[in-house]
Image 1 (cartoon, one colour):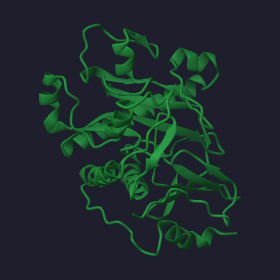
Image 2: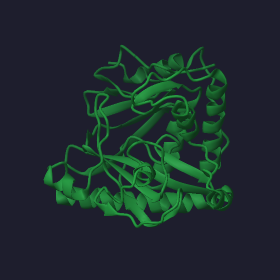
Image 3: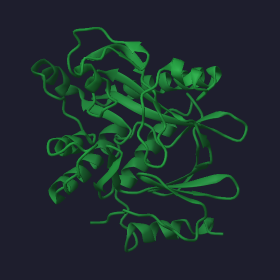
Length: 314
């Protein structure tokens, strides 16, 4: 089990430890971002999944290259299968979530809110009579506050974003247009591979000149929900969740046993960890059309990453 649960590299400066990624800021304005194998949900780390970090980095690489004509992104180099070197950005305090279906399992998802009787959410009015997992008339943006240091994301409306000064009107229009265009491209590419891109999140930042840049990841199994298109109609008619390869089934396992926002989360079984690893690999292959080749060089993943990042040591 080659698992990267921690990516501490003392030779690199200015470490920031995120839920999934380890970040190091170099003096010249570049940021080294290492994708670990940690699995995050419900604002906590549930477990670590073999090869997940490589899958995320390489899936995001595919999408960054596929959408470079839509908006600029932070990527400068890929020195390792788990690592991207990008331009350091000041991350905007709003996370942009785009949804094409009435779906989700978290407290901020529109399906959860809709089931609880809410119709006005995120500054949007949803009609009565929608069914679980139904396609929305058009894609909508459901922004949340960007939670730092273990905080919780909170729903926002466009009016609240502007009134609270989180973004300027020009910034909000820019990220909204980028997000909808990226989502449209993602749905079109996914459909070509027999997939449905259900919803996704985007993070944007500004560079030293104030230009808005796409950051973090894009259309990965962690940031997005995908369904298998061939299963959708049958599942929708029977009221079942369409077949997927995102981490919703891990969420479902957890929520069937506890309230993860209040109770201790039980240890994820080894069998579920192994199955999740297979699902991430299947997701990469289905999304990109490429065969996943795990990098098994060196004794451990961390040793390999350290070797590949030596040119960045001061």
